[in-house]
Structures are given as C-alpha cells and as structure tokens.
Length: 132
Image 1 (cartoon, rainbow, N blue to C red):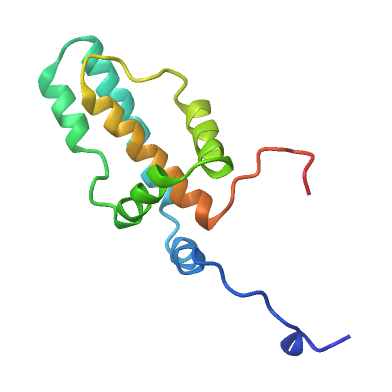
Image 2 (tube, rainbow, N blue to C red):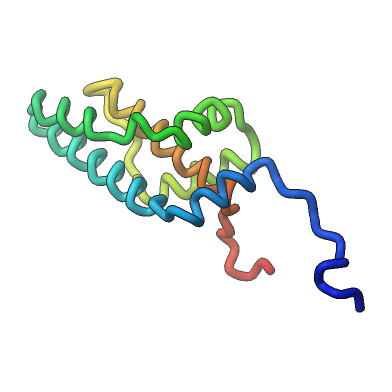
C-alpha cells in the first residue's frame, strides 16, 4: 500500500470549484426553498388574478444568484441523462406544468431547473436507491 499522499488522485471535475464554494457556504437549500416559496406565491396570486402579488413574487426570485446565472445556458444546452435527472427532480417538487396565464411562470420554472442543474453538477443526483 502506498501512503495516502503518494496515491494518485483523480483530476478535479470542472464543477469542483463550485462544489467547494457550495460546501463552504451551504445556502443551496435556502435558495431552493426560497424560490419554491415564491413560485407558490406567484401561482396563488395568478389563481386570484392579483397582479401586484404576482409582480412581488416574481421580483423576489433569486434572479441575482451568480451560480444559477452561470448554470442557465448550460441547462438549456444540456440533453439526455443530465437534463432528465434535473427535470425528474423538478417535477417531483413541482408536479404542475406552467399555466398559460403569464409567461413569467415558465421563466421561474426554468430558473429553478437551472438551480437544480447547478446542484447536480456539484453534487450529482442519485435517484436509484439500489445503485452503489
């Protein structure tokens, strides 16, 4: 056996700096929960046709989150298994598709999916309880 320091280490992934930053300041859950709350507030306001409440909920989404801004084009360009994992996670939390009342609801959905995509890049989702 080689000493731990002498063993070869795998090359860091491109998401390694992002994962390190998320691990140091674990605000991932807070950001996700906050955005999901605002989505629920937006949908409720839309059901009641309360324009001011819709505007307030839309403005309260974390639009200034740099990690999500960076992940958004990557999510939109993604295909296959990575996007399917993100969509699966999103649909488990938000089972209803966006309504036709306002296009902003679809924008919120896409933003939250980009947030989940950034989490999946840093900490890959595992949905199969039997996988090792």
